[in-house]
Length: 604
Image 1 (cartoon, rainbow, N blue to C red):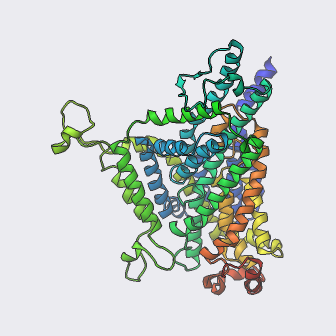
Image 2: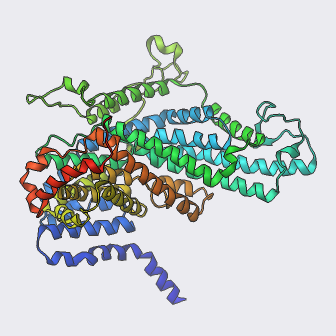
């Protein structure tokens, strides 16, 4: 008994042991007094802690603030200054708008409206669960989008199983065929010919039908998580790795003398939106093959279809009429999306050209619009103000007391904005800057030149598979933070446009389809108890392969055209920083001639 208590005590302290191991295992790197190896020690220690989650990942992200100055890699002032920048503010504005949508329940109305329009057969119901999740995860966090769909998902699952139970009871008792499934009254129209013999609804073997329902519910459950993961990649603010890419790419390009990396909200959506859309439909088709099988081509059981339709109708009716606050948030959201898209369109420019500094560069960024519209949410009213001539029309309390309520208060923002994600982003920016300034990322990039003999598209695909596998067991934000500077230096050393590998690796960080621990959406749907790990793993591994294939196609076709990936910017050809990798200049010269041959042509 004492030994059991002893081992339980050790297990209770497992995180302490893991933290100690994270600092001791890579200590051999400190034997070399160079900046590269000191930075490598910090990077490996943080990678172990991110992988094991012995510390909360946000706490681990704060470690550069003390490790880098203590090891004399960078001054504390420089490290802390890397934590918040333009990209952080862009994300903060997006988070606040997302909170406002949740506060007025606009996200739920959008989701239920889409689900209501898409029908109630199993395959269209699956699409009806996926499309709103996918769309909303572009603008609010993937976690919030999945959590919002969870009650609908549970209701559909419960009603499907309740339908089976009621069908058995009705058959044995030979009662009339009108079914009451958890107080959902089905009209004759919805249930088809409800006066017909109920045995027509339940002619197959009971156990076969049960297995079919269980399999269908698994497909519905996975569809929500996968749609959330796919939707996040479509916009810059959809998921943190996209912002890690933009922030680090801008920083790295500026080190070489460029204004920025050229990644804007508009050109990112031009590339990632169609990519995300294709992945969603590929996912939908794959889930149908696995979980609906031949049922997607057969006539739908009318009773089951009626139950699904009734569930969606009930949830939509709960929302009531559209409210004043929803309209205000929808207007703010629409204006923000338009400002992001039209700030700097390729070739023709945008509204940002109206605000220039003395050197002719635009002074506004996507973060400018983001924070402007986020600020408006603390000013605009949530309900029609109970003042002046609006008093009679106001939805406020009928006390007659003049009242003005903004959509958001700072108290609400404090509670609901995911502030920890901003620190996590900042930790990635600080680590990336240290890797670049210390020379570590260049060292690793030079070592990876052993892959230079591969064609560009093959190198890219191999790296995407590696990244997609790594992101299954660690935070996608942490993975992106660690890899972006390495992808940058590897691209330079093998003579490719840095954005070619960086964008691909960033998108691959969202291909977390296999394990519950990979992303919060996976964990949320797994908590329903409908799935087992093999269900997610076996379905997800094929989806990972398909998604990497779609990404390889996208980055080598319309992605190459949008970001001009066939050309290496002059700043990398003329910079003396490249000479630290022996033979790099020759590699660049030969690669420029062969790169366009290895990529599909983007011109007619």
